[in-house]
Image (cartoon, rainbow, N blue to C red; front, side, top):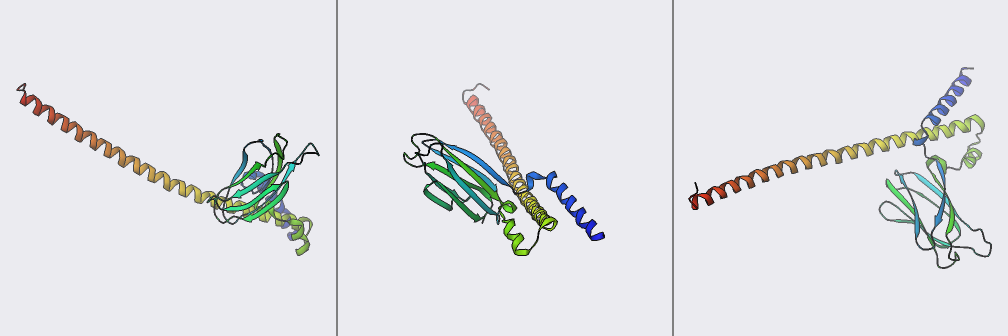
Length: 217
């Protein structure tokens, strides 16, 4: 009885925490992109290190006679190419982030395959816990129902904890940068004030010598 109560309480607490802090949980995000006939459309997301990213993209065409293709390129914050595909109508890319920062996925229309029209693309971008295949995990570990939901909540809580640590590190880095900037501004102000005082003193000395030569004083 106590075990069932504890399980129910954990589930309710996890659900409350889950809905209370949705912005901290890595989720799946579907994006609809309209790519111009000339140009590139990019999607970016700031992701911390050691996070699984999984995305599916599909070119949408209203005309069956025209089947447009695109060039897809995914890069890391340091410019490393994580995925590249030409003449693609659909595809998938998956990777585990190696560094924290902004990851960029760019789509570009290829040639005249689009019939001189804009191209529509559906992009399903998943990160963290949303990228896990829970059906496979449930079959492999033979779990279902409440236990499976608790595992999902456990993964969500871990993701929130990692995001909080990441935000804490980012806040510390920003504080260090702010303190360095304030210190540099203070030294610059002191230096500017010193230069102004020296220049003023030199001007006064020069004017005094000038007036003495002219015998005005």
